[in-house]
Length: 372
Image (cartoon, rainbow, N blue to C red; front, top):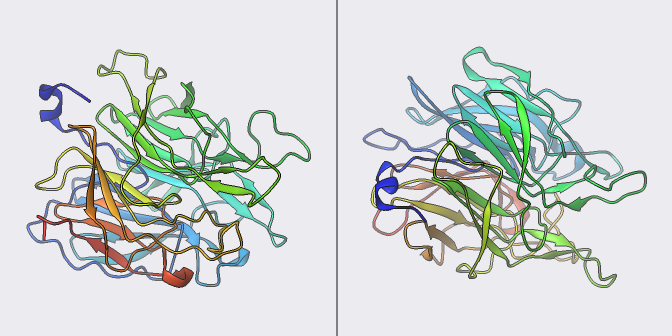
């Protein structure tokens, strides 16, 4: 937590998708042009106003060949989507992370799936220039990861926190993909990478979180069951807060980690998360949906049972350090997310899986009490 003077500045940092719409009335947002789940999302703020993006993801068939490289842009002023140039690469990806900065969108990693079901993480950093509808390549991620938490710090450094990798430290021929502890920092000014203090506790993937001011918060996720019995992947219930330097002159690779108490509700995997101030609720990181059953890309749990979305929406209050329940019974809950948007009076979730593991094109708006 920060001093009162620092908090008055309310700098906005985002994970997976975050932002603020400034229009007097938020327009009705159209559905995606196609149903998509596990799509990487981001929002860009420029002189023309905010622009929301969706990259890649999986379609309604939920098979390896339903994974797409498609890209879409939404203008919150009109609420309409338009198709953009697909993300470069030999195939579409799942588990990628996206974040916008300086008129560009940075798209990190993720994994590809082959016809036999094999899953491989990629090291790609694709940088999208919306005004030119083109991509260029940034320096590869040192440890390729998917299902990582992403956050922006001091409008320059992008953090990739945890995730799973098929080519991480100690990997080699015949090795199995596993969650990693790495906290990797990309310097957008220098196109270089740094390694920060690793995540504590259990290494996880599919966790959810954000960076706001100099605070990182991530919750839950899944980890590999190495006991030899039961499902090969189990849900984590760990919640952690990392404190970064208050000053730009501090060593940003040094993170002080603190374990948090359990959050409201029981969602554990691929929750939608984002940070920022609603009109009446400043300084919070929001979490919505997700599932208490870790699952593969088809929505079927590693325990063999179909996963279902949680109806709980909650928040971490960065002022008090407390958890807050926003809605215990969120209408039409979804799971399988790579971020959410914190709008002026509402939370916005793009795509995902509804009940029955149905991939949706809906753009869901969640209005906390007091903002309705």
